[in-house]
Image (cartoon, rainbow, N blue to C red; front, side, top):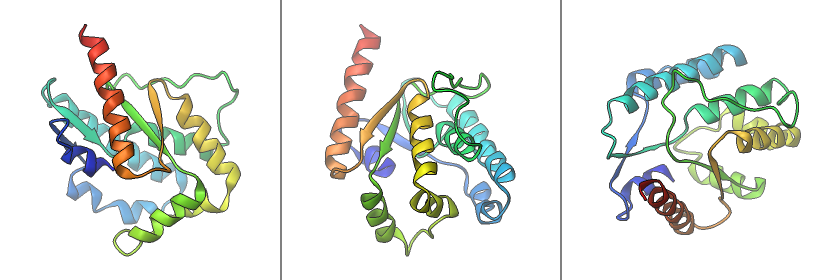
Length: 179
């Protein structure tokens, strides 16, 4: 989805990702305990945030996962939020994007998409847990939706429809901030 957005003719954007030298450590950290694994992903967030600081304000930067995913997994593993009215605060040391999309899928569609990419990207323990533990999946979803500024998108539709919905929302919300 992030790649498709970056290629869209409706925006002039580029995909920002973690440097390959840091990404190469992921298999090692995926095998570590949850705290160590989340700390590693938080390091990714810091690296990406630093890269965002050097991006011109006029550039549309597209991220495929960032701090919202890190915190949603961390809190879901810890059992969720303490209460339904608990607020999630964006860390002051991380750049906060102006637009954040959360694409949610029903489990059947999620499994279908994982099966399509399985040969290129191995199935992670996190994806296995989401599939096997509905309570964990529900906690993760609720936490993600509580993150301030999140715009949820139904991922149970074609990529083209999702891109149109995301870009329509982006254009409308960007127009509001410039007028």
